[in-house]
Length: 258
Image (cartoon, rainbow, N blue to C red; front, top):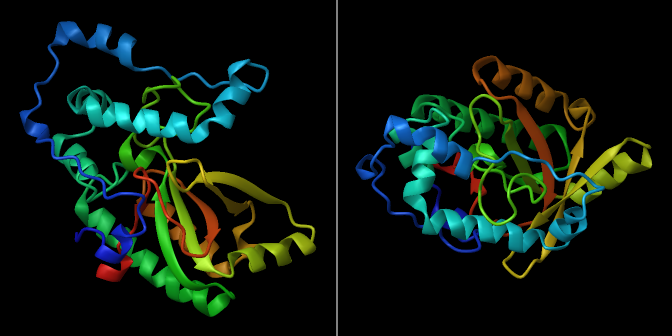
């Protein structure tokens, strides 16, 4: 599978570089595992009545980048965190090399998924007003840990994915997304809005979701159903307008390389 294109790399805040040789990272001794888990894994969820709730949301960008920086400064520890979630060295190497998200066990499955995305682009541009469609994958199934500021420890990655627990979160990026969802709102359909981070200084944008994908496109709903037949992780879809910039933990999917 080809890596992402130079054009896609230009949409990242900065190019992600992690040059660790995963196979050279020492594995944990069996008698170390329990203490390691207790030290590094933490899966709490901060509820709205917790004093930390508003603080975390108000500083979401700082929380996200602090977790990312911790991972980059503690790569060998993080490799063993992923190993304890049953990811192979090959999966981890491809993930940290930005070649393949963790949720795809093999390159052949990832290749098929990218080809299916390419077909979906054609379907959506024929069935909807959306144009210049691209796809970005987000969520913990990309790099392995949750960047939701309300999940896990505030200052480092601690809620770590395990297949097939995490969804495959796909963002459909296109022109006219705001127009399409504005029309859906006029029809009194329930639209979900999610804040996403666009730069280190905390600039944010909005992503849109809808429970009934058929209201967007019958072809989109059918595509999701077909993909769920061969993927272990379930697919979740959101939409974002224009040509946004993405943080390190989101990966443009290489449909233009196929």
